[in-house]
Every structure is written in C-alpha cells, then in structure tokens.
Amino acid sequence: MSLATAEQNTPEALSDHGSSAHGAAGHGKKGLGNPVLGMLLFIVSEIMFFGGLFAAYFSLRVSAGTWPPEGNEAFLIKEHVLFPSILTLLLVISSLTCQIAVWRIRRGDRVGMNRALLMTVVLGVVFLIGQAYEYTQLGFGVADGTFGGTFYILTGFHGAHVLGGVLMLGVCLYRGGLGQFSAQHHDMVEATSIYWHFVDVVWVLLFSLLYFI
Image 1 (cartoon, one colour):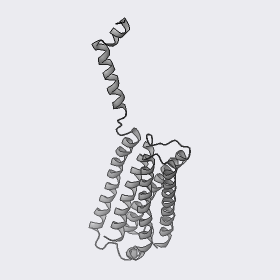
Image 2 (cartoon, rainbow, N blue to C red; image 1 turned 90 degrees about the vertical axis):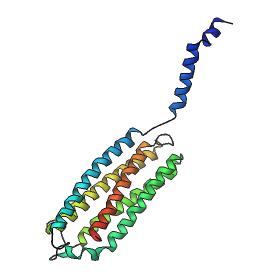
Image 3 (cartoon, helix red, strand yellow; image 1 turned 60 degrees about the vertical axis):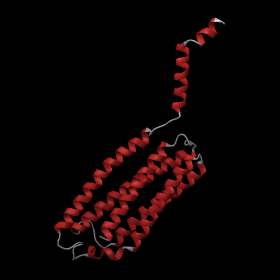
Image 4 (cartoon, rainbow, N blue to C red; image 1 turned 180 degrees about the vertical axis):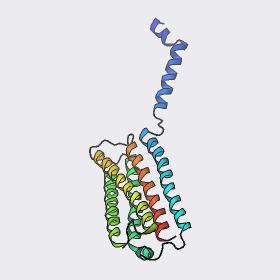
C-alpha cells in the first residue's frame, strides 16, 4: 500500500470526505431568499399601516350618525358600485396571472413567465386608469366631509401601492426579458408576487368596506 493510499484511508480523511459529501448534498436545500424574507417583513409593516387606516375609518364611522353622511354625492356611493366591481375583478385576475408567472418560472418556463407578467402589468395599469376615471365620476372630493376624506385617503394610498407593484412587476418583466431568472434563481419574482397578492387582498377589503358595508 502506498503512502498516498494510506493517507486517504485514515479516519481524518474519511471524516472530511463524509463532511464534504454532506455539505454538497445540503447545498441544494434552499430556505427563504433575502428578497422574499425582506418582502415578508415589509408586508408586516404594511399590515400595521393599513390596520391604522382601517381603525381610523371605523372610529369616524362609529362617531357619525349616518354613514355615508347625507348632504352630498357621497351618500350615493353605493349606486356607483358596478364600475369598481369590474375593476376589482380585473385586479383579482391580475393576482392569478401573477401567480401563474411564479409557477412558470419554477418550471424553468421563462417565456410563460414573461407573458403572465406582461398580462399582470397591463391589468394593473388598467386598474389605475379606471380608478382615476372613477374619481372624476363620483361627484365628491376629499374635502367633502369625513366620508370623502377617508374614502380618498384609503383608496389613494392603495392606488399608490398598486403603482409601486406595477413598477416592481415591470422590473421583473424587464429582467425576465434579459433571461436573468431561472428555475433556481427567481426570488425577485416570488417577492413581487407576494406584494401583489397583498395589494389585491387589501383592495378586496377596501371595496367591500366602502361600497357594501
């Protein structure tokens, strides 16, 4: 037996080899990436932010005798429910297309991911345009009583979040077009989808609260 062979068969060498093999096997296991973890922490702060807005809304509502208050067009808000219902449906569909993008890239389908992201961006832009149009049709403004103020603050902040989500989706689409995502590396797409789902859930709650409850 040669000296080199003897060294390879020593307990230390065998132990090192086993550790290396274990490390290589464990290397394929991946936890939450930094973008996903960061987004989850950001969502927690956003939940507290919107929770404060909802709490303020309910406080004003409880203290008011009639809600929405009579005396201006805000009292007729429930008669304008059809158009925002369509916008809500589009936003819910966009959440589905965003998730499809995640499913596609998990399978390594870059083309499918890009198509789903593009559809999500288009639906998000349509929602923003539709919301801006709705503002012109309501007949009341932010200064028209407590309902007007809370309505525009709640929907306006949400609209700003939708805009942020559209920009994030646009960046994902741009990077996806450059081929920077794969089945193994797509944390930004995952993180953006989490944000987009959160924005959609918030809108469904806002829509139900402002137009039906």
